[in-house]
Image (cartoon, rainbow, N blue to C red; front, side, top):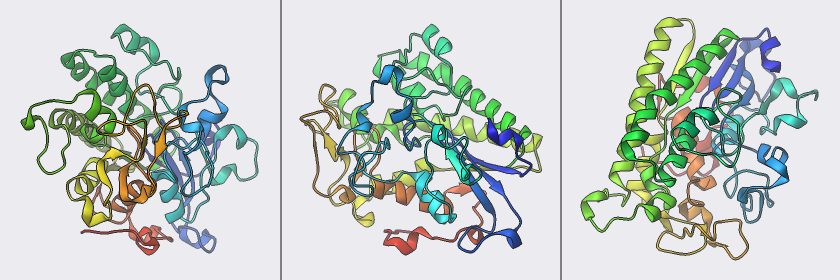
Length: 364
């Protein structure tokens, strides 16, 4: 990987896993962050800015590669699984860096030092063979964190939607977290000096989960958000173990800044109080889909012919069955970089393009 040859220290954001190179403030060009000169990302569909368009197995494109994906900001599909920009895009903007493009077109380009995206939709933390032994099959890609990067969301999604027993899924959480820790260690040894490691989002609020695991029992749902309690508790279980792993690694690498990104905490605020953030459409129904109570139909997903998107995506939290709208991703990025949802807090002096200046709703 090209980053290994760099003599600059590196910052990683694990979402998925992003890395940023650190530079002296005096050498920072006008309009750029005084702290970081480049951004590299690794992960799955929450971070993929177009690799699935270029690396699709057998040329078979995923549903995120078709309209109406990308309609809000780009006016066309880019391979991003949203109506517009992703968290990594907003991070790049706030650091005064260009939006990341897929790595196949960047490896030999002059602007590679500014960053590249190695994420691909469907990538897992654990490798294909380990998951297959557990009865969990990933048909979208054979990539795992061992070859590019993830936070474990796809590992769990595949397992839940293939009806793997709950206790078996809980049992793989330590393995997922250990794989993330192993990758952090490897990247630190390549020179990373600041790493932002995000936790899982509240999966019990995804339209796909709410549809598949619908329950007639009111006690199964959070009374404020309408989300499935057990699945959100599962996400929190992952996050607790991940934070413990981060603390362990921080002791091993005291000169590396390991930051935990609390995506769960950020998202919970607008799931429980959507109107405070401008989400007057819905916090649990998908903007784009094929119908049903949560606008998710497994046989007619967003991007398929016959699916439909809402008129105002910015008033919805969820774009499709398990991806946020640009509006929701913008809030999470702001919360992590400017707000209280990173531990330790991100240095505000490193930001040059604050999200709050872009009409972002705030409810601190």
